[in-house]
Length: 193
Image (cartoon, rainbow, N blue to C red; front, side, top):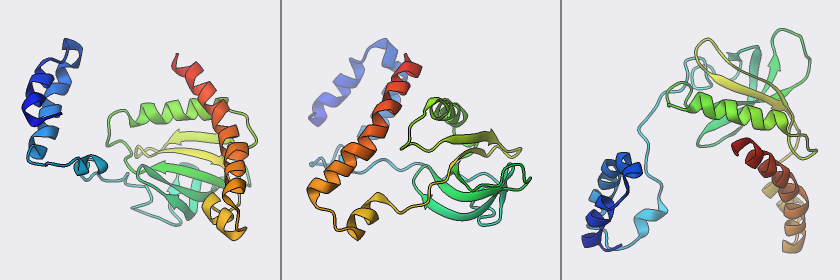
C-alpha cells in the first residue's frame, strides 16, 4: 500500500480492531522511508526475555524440571528446547523428550498455549506422533511436556544419509509427515470449534 494511503486505511479499520491501530502505526512508521518490501521478509524482533530460573539457561544438563533430570539437549528453536530426560523419582524408568518453552511465565498466554498443546497431544493416537506421557509446571513457573522419546535422526539428515531422490523424499513426506499431520489438524479443528 502506498505510504500516503496507510494512515487513511488504519483510520478506516472497524471498531473491533481499534486496539490494533496504535501498534499498526508504530510498526509502519519507521518503514515509511523503505521503498522496497524487503522488511516484510524479516520478522519483527521481540524484546529480550529471561528464561525460567530453573530452565535450561540456568542449569542445563543435570538440571531438574519437575520430576525430570535433563540429560542432553536434543534440539532448540525459537520458542523452546527439547531435552532427553529421565525421572528422578524412579516411578517410570524410560527416557522422555522434555519440551520446555524459553519464555516460562514471562509472556501472557503461554500457560494457556501449553495447556492447549497438552490437550491436543493427549487426544492424539497415531504411530507417527509421539505420545504425551506427562505435563506440568514447576514451582518456579516452568511449564513442561514429557513426550515419548523416539531415537532417530532429523528427517533431512536421513534423506541425505540414504541419498533419497526427490520422488522418494516426497513419498516420505506424504506417507510419514502428512499422514501424521492430517489427524492432528482434524483434532485441532474439533477442539477449536
